[in-house]
Length: 142
Image 1: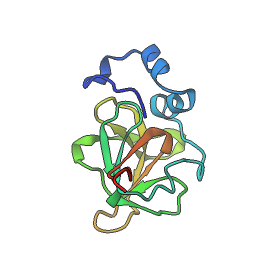
Image 2 (image 1 turned 90 degrees about the horizontal axis):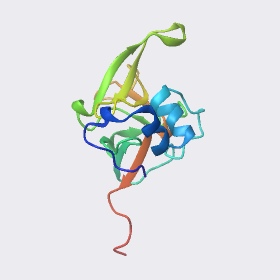
Image 3 (image 1 turned 135 degrees about the vertical axis):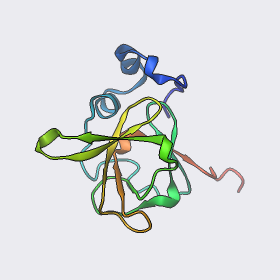
């Protein structure tokens, strides 16, 4: 899990982010990088819980909205709350896409595409490195 950051994470400097994040996470979250398909630790995560921003810990997605898209990245059909994410037009790499960022710290999470399942028809295609997972039940009650 990432170290908690202030509610207004926009006050952190680039060197602060470099200290808080591993080089791989920094590349994805702060430089809008993409992890290779099929390599993310959270791709096969099937437990009940909440997926949070890997930079600031803001809750982003409920496990009930996660599905297997076949894309090689964790996919969700909706954000936990519309205010949890920012959608930004991305014209990089010679195409137009919609980038998804954390609304608290403005870190890059992935992209959203209009080819997801019902009820939304959206596919939030996220990088595992951009997320942390908190299970609803850690199994300690057994």
